[in-house]
Length: 119
Image (tube, rainbow, N blue to C red; front, side, top):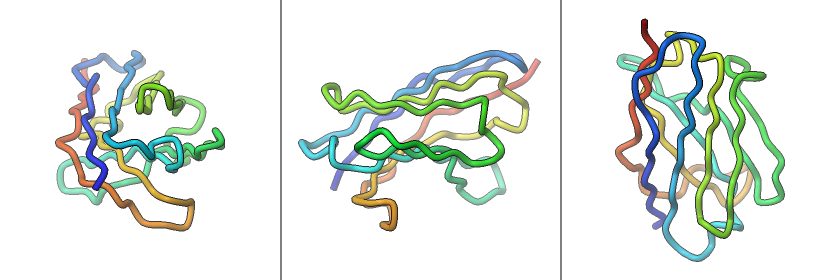
């Protein structure tokens, strides 16, 4: 199974930016659809952003226009640039992989990286 290590989280003031990284194991990274999820305390895990192997992106309505997902296949890494952060963006952010847009996540869930938006 593909494994992931997320990093880049922290405490940021409302309106500020943060850039998350997710490093994946294995040699098939470039073939996957890569996803960023988030999970806030007491809430279900939410799909935030996705990027296909060809660079097509998709975003949850709650982050559209503020977050940008990108990938570097040479580094087996997917990024999430988060701008104009809001307190409601506070959550643990995790990444995973799918073989296609119509598949379920196929990797092992990592620890995630905590993002806290607060003044």
